[in-house]
Image (cartoon, rainbow, N blue to C red; front, side):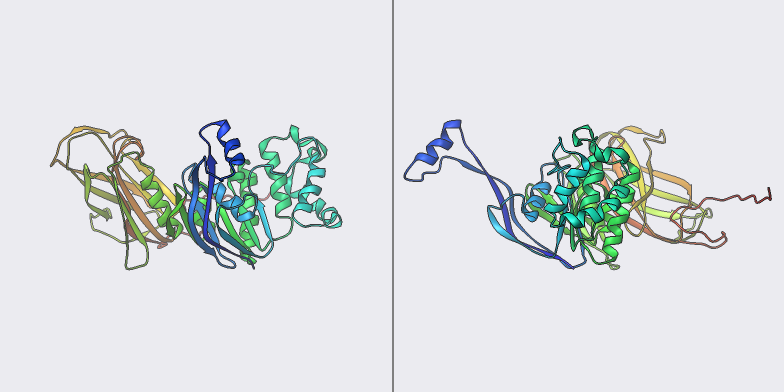
Length: 407
């Protein structure tokens, strides 16, 4: 199994005020600097242990792709070091290293040799690579006629033809079709089960939360936060809201989970309760039972609109169901301080057995991105148990009907 140790890593690019400044800097015998340093990454420190999966998230421009290039050695650092133990397979920029005038098959041989395979090994692996990529006769066509999805299929198939000690994946998988994305992540999961160390950059919340043990949040070239994927995504979700007056507070709960509360507090949640049809508060609910989610809201400043929503997540933090009052045509407008409003959502708990959490949100429009008044993750925890339904598996329940007949 492989490991990655990143120590004080930094990358800066030289910025010259004019095209002549670079030449003058080269010619100046005093070695006088005529440039400014633009730091893309600074003071990056983390370790990926053998067999561990770590996800890297952050907005575009945060430095994610540059970090992966430094780790894989395609770009040299300005400061710090990267220590890698084990054989690495990396899928970074789409089609990196592919020659557009060569066929897919020829590019497979070249890419395979760059990964350290011999020509004989690539020839042996070729049938499996072709079968996994599933591009048919296009394997013998020039890469310039490939779509981005086809390039990704070939690149991924080559990079993962042999299980590596370390697999590093950038956003390249996002350009593929849904079928191949599922197929690729199944292979990644299989590698993980066999001990491959994984470092992945993705905006796909579900993928990161289902595969990774840990996540790093990059912001302005530095690691802003590190922890369990769900708490990191909760913080990221709060951070991308546009309101500069927002506050983000994370607290650890007794059960080891992390609650994230954010917003500008122009409206706040007084209480959240989960009730049955007898109006009794409950924490354990039977599959398919009708439940009532009541959210009591206080207005603390005059606001133009109020949207109240909720989101149910499973124990891995993956989103199961959510909606809000905007989508249900219950938008309230022109609200004033000290008004108190009750929202009661009724729904059937058509979920599989397990533990779930509820996030509640107050915002101005259909999403929290324009103005977030208050968003509370892990606002409520509840349990679903199967009391009277036929056995089933999964996170969603639906009443099945079956007819059997002899033909």
